[in-house]
Length: 281
Image (cartoon, rainbow, N blue to C red):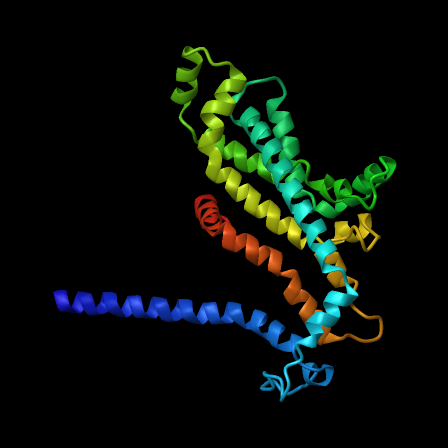
């Protein structure tokens, strides 16, 4: 009986790892295909032969140099990283304060205001593009970093996420702090906010990924090539009558470098934040 149970456990262990290896391979294939296409010629990249995977003969690494010289990737990197940084800071700062207010404080109109937050989460974000564009335009902030950051100054999703995080904390912590003489701000900043670190990390991860993938807003608010982001820059590489797939794939490979570097640096926080929030990107 014991040996049979051990064999079943071993079989489940092997099957689990086989499944994970297969899924990992499926996830890696698009990235490998992107890099391999980047070093092909145009004729090779549009070949209909599905088994034509590797370049024949010479690997054309000059496609990366061609893209780097044609598009100022250092400027695109700078604009994208600034947008991600300020959106993450603003989202986490405003969401943690709003989440504390909705999760721990009692004030008139609380339910109505939070219902408005939930309604904003249910409405497609494209509805707000025209009002946001008019606001940025009236302020004279088109083609600026502030214009890129503007939609991410506040976040309904972040407010909801932090509200849930604050509601999960024991009330005794706040009561003990109040007995010790802490005011509302001190209870928030010194006692409760440090305990919601995992929720803030999760929000920062989601905000960074969504900001990096944002395409429509940068294309609308930043028409100048010197102020646009990586996603908008890649979209503008699409030709009207034809596509240079090798150079496009080379540009896409260069574009993912910032997120890869950020993930390598903050890998532990990424895993902890996703595992704690139970969410997915």
